[in-house]
Amino acid sequence: MKEKSQTRRELLKRGAALAVAAPYVITARSQETLIVNTQGGEYQELVERVVIRPFEKKFGVKVIHDATGTASQDYAKIRAARGAPGFDVAGLLTPPEVILGVKEGLLEKLTEREVPNLKYLWDKAWQVIPGGSGAPHTLQYAALVYNKEKLDRPRSWADYWEPQKRYGDKIKGHVINYNPANLLSVYALIHGAQLGGGGVDNMDPAWARLKSQKPYVGVVVTGSAEAVPHFENGQVWISPYWSGRSGYYIDRGLPFEMLIPQEGVIGLFDVACVPVGAKNKKLAYEFLNWRLDKDIQRQWALAYFTSPTRSDVADLPAKFAATQIVTKEQMAKTQFPDSDVIGARRKDWTLKWQEIMA
Amino acid sequence: MALLLVFFVVPNALLLSTSFLKSEAQQLTGELTLENYGFLFGKSIYQQAFLRTFVVGVCVGMLTVVLGYPLAYFLVRTKSRWKGVLIALSLAPLLASVVVRTYGWYIILNRFGVANDLFLTLGIINERIAFMPSTGAIIIGLAHALLPYTVLTIMGSLNGINPNLEQAAMSLGASRTRTFFHVVLPLSLPGIAGGFILAFSIAISAYATPAILGGPATQVMATAIYGFMTQLLDWSIGAALAVVLIVSSLLLLYAASRIGAKQAAI
Image (spheres, rainbow over the protein chains, first blue to last red):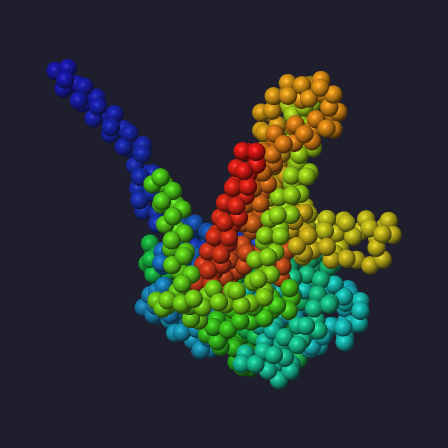
């Protein structure tokens, strides 16, 4: 009898405990988790507010945002971990890493079945990266920025590469240069080569300009985020800079202006990919599709001062659209050098850059 | 032993094997080659990085010993009731991250920094000087970061010297200076050597301080390895650089320990 009553009491206890714990057990089991890698700085707050939190809300999932590393560092992680770097979405790769990832078989191939919104992308996207190798979600370009309190408005990339000719000795120490490990530097060097009749196949004119610019360079960095304090403290007056970040900081009071020089600009697609060893691929594809959702594309473009990668986002403010790549004409004017060639020659270019700048 | 095998020998063996693989357009191929080493030894930029690494290591080692020895001596011999506080204060820099301390030097040394402002105000210079990026700036930053390690090592050695030996020397007529140079200094040589080797070893493999104060144009081996591994994604040359750094530093440390052992025997 005693034994029976004890069993009943235990059963009641267990039942009560289960009743109290049940909601948590169910939540823990039902709430899927997705790990998304992008980058820190101003990007982190923006992407969490505009893209990640609304995604969590809509799909009832939890996103862990890994905001560390640059595109090449993130790809190095993917390679070192043989496709299982610990994040499900590599949210911010650039074309050279995507092309390498496809060659090395470390990135999932996407189709419209997994990511239906791929069908709305600019055709140009698939000329820059192999078709279906990722979801290009942001389009921006390497603009020319200058401190409008210190300098007259530049007109040409020559004003950056030969600043002494336009601005004289007062520019000494106020020019910034970037290591070619950063695509921004590569694009600026290509413009430098083009000024002398060269290009990706002949960079000699760029090296001649780098040598003549060197005495006027006051700051040398690798990452574009590292340049921001130098813009803010007045040390740097002229720089090539990503249009997105430029717009963001100018909007927040930086006394700079961004412009498209007369020779034009080189465009950059930021791409989100799924590593082959990602744990939650289904949700990762859903996230990529969300990143290309029309409304999210519009909100993201306005928040980060970049262009949508969908060709059907037409209702952007006219003044904003004038500085972006949103029409066929603007797209046609934008250069997209072969990223495969850039990837293959970057080591030699970096070496040459180091020899000159050392 | 097993831990050493798993966490040191195996990774280094992988690194060594990668350094002999050919890399094409950022991809490792299975082809064996000596080209990676040929590339490194044939380019003056990497010869300079190699030389700069060891110049930085030696200068930082010497600077921390020269600056750290008097401090360690004072901290060991002081009779002040604040001795504990003084020791804590001298080790306090270790509480701040090396990145934070290095950015402190960045603020002081950059072209528009505190040092330039001060020298201009005092009329020592007429126009701003770029103190950084430079090898000198890397040495200053690392010496500051590593000084507490050398002080601790030398203090350990000085603490082990029997005070009666100094009293005996002085009671036999030796001056304070002579006692120091003929008794204290020779007996503290193992501490000096230990402090130097510790600072040297950390300095030649340091990344953060050379990256910030040297920038991408003033490379040392660690920043060059990082560049090849994570920026240019050329792992075979990155691995070859790492092998050169490991082998050369092991050889130097072996030589230093042999010299130290000979000194101790004398």
